[in-house]
Length: 154
Image 1: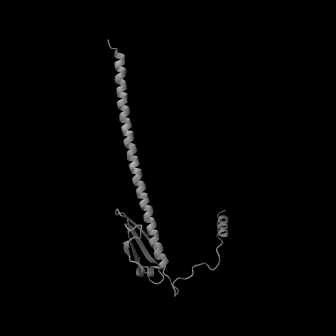
Image 2 (image 1 turned 180 degrees about the horizontal axis):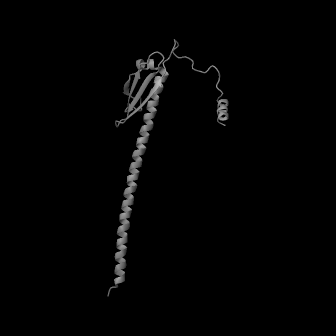
Image 3 (image 1 turned 30 degrees about the horizontal axis):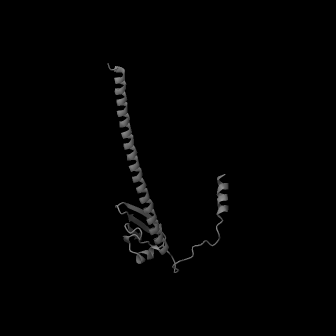
């Protein structure tokens, strides 16, 4: 004669194992999904950092060489320099009138087609000298200025 209590216990244990297996599969699937999303967000973040760096480099070139001369020295569009030759760039410079600043728009396109843009204003170089000295006539005492600002706030 078979004990009915032990059969009930074995059947209940089997149900527990099946339910814990289902919970384990759901947890593993959720973990894989979160890992995939995390890697995707990391990849997008790296792409944004690289795009910001390339945009900064483009705008720094325009600032350094002057908006007037940049278009004569560089093409307004093309592939970025090595090791980023798979990225493309475009620089648009609107003409300034008199002492008005140039409107400069820089755009880079990633290898997968995402576009990143940055726009700024750059003042024209005035006068005969191509690279004027832009240092202040008197040294700036930043600590004293900071102390004055703190005193004014109090």
